[in-house]
Image (cartoon, rainbow, N blue to C red; front, side, top):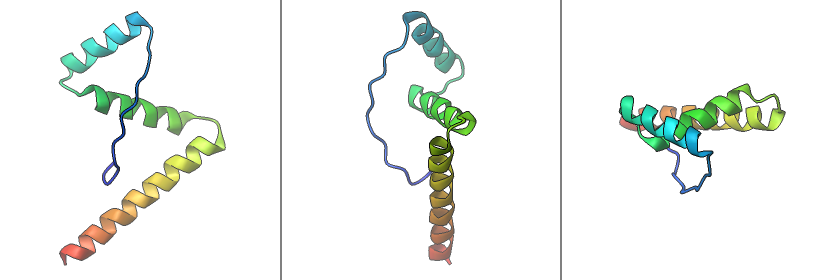
Length: 75
């Protein structure tokens, strides 16, 4: 998502899962950060709680507005 600031987060995964993820990101030439972002966004999209969906929707709307403002600034 564009316009978002990054923050550093430490996560702990089971060893086998961490190895599998590392192999996947190497094989797909993806960064670990991009992989974790996609995983978190997917979880929020499929989360049954209203909070996760509301936050994701609000973030999407903010990104859309940022894009519109950027396009208008270019004109």
